[in-house]
Image (cartoon, helix red, strand yellow):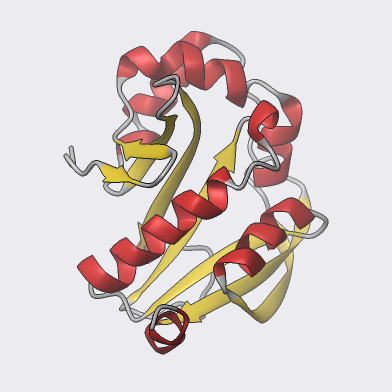
Length: 184
């Protein structure tokens, strides 16, 4: 289990704990959250606990916690290697994924979290390029990528989501050179 606590102005990004399951369920049970990411809504607190034990125990997977309430309201993380979604991703690349509960949409919290993860990738983990993908129609997710400085790279069609439907996925990318230009 990683012990990284990352901080931003309004957020703490920290490892998920099993006792976060009720909060995770509260937000991950909303149908639109999973639909956007291609996974089924959580059906119970126990299912959320199981997701924390398995999927969310991966290195560099963080609960997005509001400093004001200390409640996890979303998740963000860095994927490497086999976890990544596109064949175009290289050995020194990573992918960032994220979601946040519906009540917190439009507050700029996820761009804040993603910028911190970009800093981690490029300044702490020696990553050369970071990718982000979103399914056709998920324009909120695309806006996060635009705000953070990702550039369009390519589209992949005919991709089966974990829900079993076939989707088009758009991939955005930022290289370490682009990161340095944005953060001079």
